Length: 506
Image 1 (cartoon, rainbow, N blue to C red):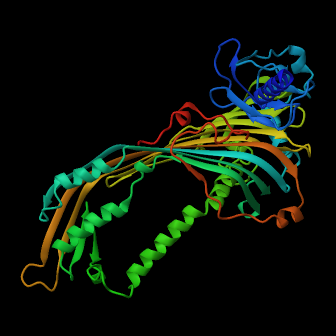
Image 2: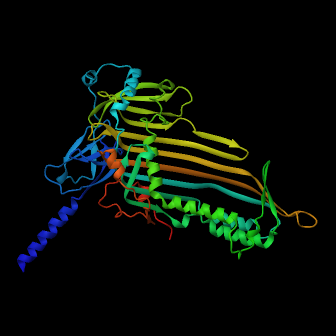
Image 3: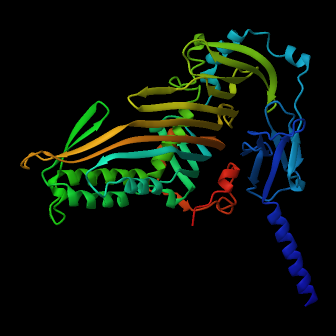
């Protein structure tokens, strides 16, 4: 009995020890400033690994039992790399020291090229340096959406329909949520050529959508309220004159609106049903829209001719300056800044390998509003677009996308009078039946952040690509609050604090 007890204790100890080693997590800080280090690469035996988030945090799950020889390596631009024995790593904080550049290290680099020559050679070597063939990539994609209603005012100036009063409108406005956040996360294998949407197939392993259903705006309830009021006060043969400022439109009243028992649908109803069907298909086809979003991240890189990062395609439109030298993943790099000379939209910093002239990192941001207009009470301002692209060599000794991040922000506003007049040509006397006059003022702010990390890139043939069959009906799992267990066992980008704190209103 005592022997059996000891065996059980030993088994439990081994199990707990094995469990503790199935993941490695820590926070990476600058040893001098104590600030978090984002985008550091963490890998086991220099194979596939993860990237630290904006807070310098990472969580790495191990695919196999760790041996005494397995090493954990942490690398980042401008810092000394650190190596640990994975089996004995238990640190919660990892300090990286800035890497000093010695003068002789600069002198042994190819030769003293001018900045213009470096950019020219980078463009010349683009086709040879990057992988444009068929590949299979294991990747994780996160899209974060933030919507805030900054202003929502509707002032009723005149209404001949009693139910359409200020109190009713205020109740509708109060029912609208002032903010709504959502987070979509997808782990998948992608087959095809990077950035070419017609040559990509997605195999979704697991996906989730974190959002608050109570903050969704459901128009069915509003539609029912409006329909009840309209049927009570508006005549069958009426039409509406809708005026906003100097503009006016005429809308006929559909008689079938009153014939709820009409067995056969008319063209209007059929059209509405078709639109609802298309919207539902869009929601259901999660695979297609995720694939499109990922391909846009890939396609908007400097490696594409039609990218908005066109500093290689149109170098004469930019001012380039050699800022410094550094190390990125043990590669010696030029650090070159670019700013627009003319009407281009972006500035940033590019990191170019001194040996093969490959760009292995780009940080960029817009220098002006990408779209900005105000016209007759309507306004739109796309004020933010910034991001980072990081490339690493794959098994084919070609550079492939390792990490991509882009953040966009815009504001939309409307401030103008709105008048709706009901008229009826079949009514004796005055054609004007009812009138609703109001002033409306809405301001909406949207911000979106997309992150993509690629864990593995393997070469495949066109035959392999053709043979793979995509599953189009995959749907993300709905999560009402952050669940730390959902991605357990899978390598993903560590969530930020906003995601960890997210919880739907009960």
